[in-house]
Length: 144
Ligand code: SF4
Image (cartoon, rainbow, N blue to C red):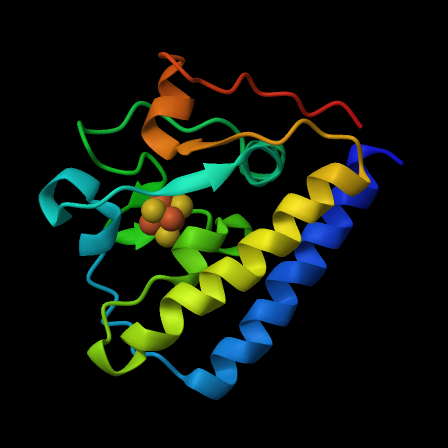
């Protein structure tokens, strides 16, 4: 099985998650603050296949500001259709907080299993580090 099949399955996982979120209805104020990692005081972690998929569909990011997601454009996500689980699941809505951890674990497990099913080496790391090419960096591979 090739990357295209794996990407198709990843899109189905994302679609399933979106259906769950439609029921949970967490509130997003679209402030873009959570994409400014340093200022917000958190990190975005992602997996190998999600990052490869994002770069395959949206291209490599332009150089961004320090501690800010390079895909943030004008205060909004510039790659909304292809963003990672962490972006899709995180909301700063206090009423949704208890649902967030279990939801992430559930869908992260599905993405991890996707790697195994398609013989893709599983890697999990902090987005900015992976994009920087620094220690622990993931090299992009989008061969289909
Ligand atoms: S990919 Fe989009 S949603 Fe995720 S951190 Fe970057 S700008 Fe924000």
